[in-house]
Length: 245
Image (cartoon, rainbow, N blue to C red):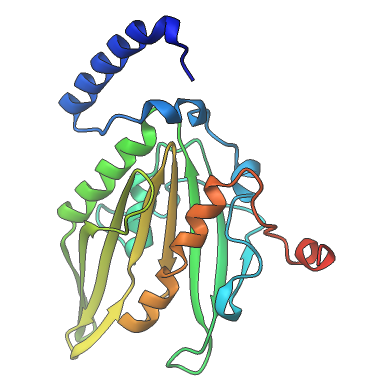
């Protein structure tokens, strides 16, 4: 926090920073969040993943190792995305660290459980805001991707970045659908939610499912944001949670 003796200097700095950010299309970070600009390491991010025990009987488990930011896009052709989570990951290639968890619960239409994943990305400076711009650009550039026929069947993936929930400093819902030439009325949904909280991106993504199941998976975004904001996040390790009561 800045003191009263440097108010004028701070105002001048913020004015210049805001002007530069507007010119570049990147939203300026709030002054009161400057203290959070030091990026978290992968180990630190892991402690802010979804808690092991979630509402509605769902559970989450932190993955032992994360493949790293932008791993879904490495070595792949442009727009070779499988789901909304891939679009978010491709936009986050400048992150300095990431951590991932898998979570699930309830009952899916296929007889199993509904499943989703979470990835946290940490950035230096205004990298997180720039990543949000990149995600929107990728969704627009890859709005419709037709995969050549495998045998007699071709698939069409569609992506769109729309407004997300009123959480964090900025948010996006990456809508993702896939259809097939031999089942024109069958639609596979693979949406993702992206929330920027200061210099951290919180991404909740789902496995292919119906729209209702996707909405259920993505409904855990408030818990994910609360974990990132908390100075004392709930345990992500199931054994630790059980031992603590």
